[in-house]
Amino acid sequence: MSNHSTKRFPSPFEIKAPEGAEGWEEMYPYYLLFSDDRRDFEDKRFWFCDTMHHPVPLYPFDAITAESWGPSLGAYNSRIFMMPPALGIAQRVLNGYLYISPIAVDDPGEIEERMQDFEQRAGFYYQNWDTLYKKWKDKVTFEIESLKAIEIPHLPKKDKIEIVTDGLGISTGFLLLDAYNHLIESMLRIWSYHFEFLNLGYAAFLDFSWFMKKCFPDISDQTITQMVAGIDVILFHPDTVLRKLAKLAVTLDLQGIFLDGQDVEEIMSNLESSDNGRKWLEELEAVKDPFFYFNSGTGFYHTPRSWIDDFSVPFAGIKGYIKMLQNGESIERDQEGIKKEAERLKDGYYDLLRTESDKKAFTEKLSLAKTVFPFVEEHNFFVEHWHHTIFWNKMREISRVFMENQFFGEEDDIFYLNRYEISQALYDLYASWAIGSPARGPVYLPVIIARRKKIIKALSSYQPIPALGSPPERITEPFTIMLWGVVSEKINAWLEALYGSKGTATLLKGHPASPGIAEGRARVVLTVEDLVNIEDGEILVCPITTPSWTPIFSRIRAVVTNVGGSMSHAAIICREYGVPAVVGTGVATQMIKTGQMLRVDGRAGTVEIGDWES
Image (cartoon, rainbow, N blue to C red; front, side, top):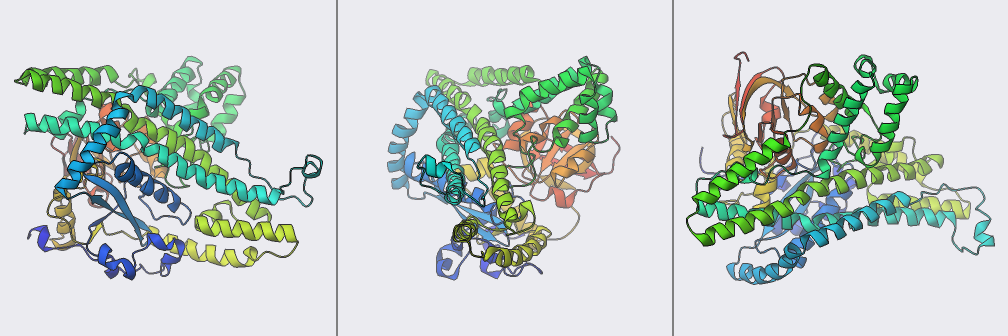
């Protein structure tokens, strides 16, 4: 194959809508679309599909998560901390999928100028990390509680007398508009908090990584990441809670109820019928807030639901742990073993350094990386899981108000309108309620929603092209490499898949995310609903894992994903659970079929597809 610099991915302006999805553009705000009036900018850039965070088409309302993280990340990088090599990330939607293009700083003079600001501003955070991080947790928890406290009023035939007797001066209809505006503000605010620390965490780790590669040119990314492993963060607590609940079930002799129960309803009913069952349910009640506010997907979409709404995923995890306990197996995460390996690597590389100044720099940079690293995972629980679970459910409450007033018929219909259209519909509802005249919404919106359901269905069966435009000679933007795992080798693989031979691959390459070699049968999991099909000893093959999948990690031999880099959530979680993993293969779910035998080498970053017996 010729070098990828001589080939390019299609222009976004060359991509047609899949059959049945024509007119998809109407679902999104104008600024998220590729457009002729910005073509000079858009056609010159390289875009890749962000299937890590947005693996399925964006429902019109769910695009708010992309709209929230884009400017928040950008403002902290480009305007607040003045990240030297990186500005923001441009976003566009094409055929329902989010494409992104990181904006790097290329001018060495500008990088040097930005470095001075960054050292002052980021340095303040690094020096006061613990104090500022505590303040962050207080802010975020307050925001979550404020979100919970937002009341979604229903529109009465006659407004309450207190408006008169207390001189309130505001109608219930106005309060409905106000509640929605506060929900949107909460989403935007929580994402601003999200990036207050995140890229500083990445930057500190990146600084340590660069130092190690300068001193040890042959060192692998995986070895560097292993030195900061062994963390205990709130993101892992939901899984810890499931293990405790499994142990309690065995102690109270309730294992039969879980293992024999056909579904959640049957299990809950049987638990409620005995004293020990009720004791177990009391413990569940005590721990589920906040640890069941855990989305079974990425949290970026209104679907799938969180554990608090649907017990099927956590109960499947509890069942798995009960089976392991019955077999005499340990269900604990080997955190101590991972910590010991981190210490062994630290001591070994420290001894190999030749100068005292290098040893001092090594100690300081590793210490800072380990100090800031927990945030890289902890923020995910507070924002994408705890906050967003409440947010999506508040939107469902607003939907029920619309349903009461015949605007549409199903609770999730609201997500087929974008946030501006919902604002207009609420005004229509408010005005018609206040005036006593018919609203247009009940006859106008159902037609739009029905059309968009068909569009989303058509887009869901469409395979988006992984990238658009001309790739750069070399990817240098650090967060693109570290988080998304988009490197020149991956771009070459995408181009090979697009222009090269169409033969059957027997070897896939990706990022070595978590060490170890494992052999086993593949289980391809495309949605959270497929998780229930996993059998003990299989190798999980999926687009990307999410933190809420950790209860199955004790049952599988390895993980292979389509997307992700060495610092993606999937990579970090696999290292912390000691599960061999290769991430960012690009095409694993397309090339591997359930039942095929795999050999996963988590240190080499390879996946062999074969037919040998394990």
